Length: 179
Ligand SMILES: [Fe+2]
Ligand SMILES: [Fe+2]
Image (cartoon, rainbow, N blue to C red):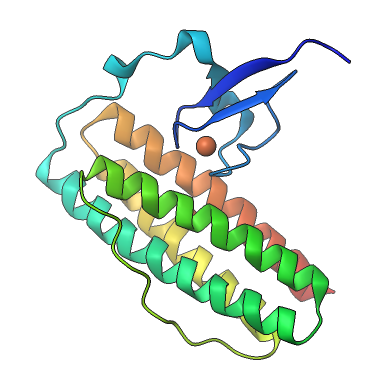
């Protein structure tokens, strides 16, 4: 066993203990390059004035993330009821990551995270995988645009990281749809 260290995610700010950073942040799904040694953490890099355009885009992103969290929660419960352990695990992981995204966005907007609204889903995991794919596709398109529009380099980085993360999710759904 090697020596463990503390890392911290530049996208969701959460800490992680391990020998090396994992390939994806376990909380928000950001790629390993965003996990930095905790000793190097510097809040001054994260305290920024948010422009009007980015505020509007963060509010839209929060809506998308809350909707996707609620959808994956429904899909997770449907899979559990159907005894489909793989889909249960997948939708549970996605629900946690999207909820983390909503929490980070609410924090940067300095608002309380709004409560989840109930979103209906299918009883069938394949249909939910198809809807999940469509939701990720919409999120990727929105965040790509938000990244381009952001005057703040920190928010360009944030939205670009979300694009990468949701692209992972899209690829996962696409793979499952082929099976
Ligand atoms: Fe993270
Ligand atoms: Fe997300």
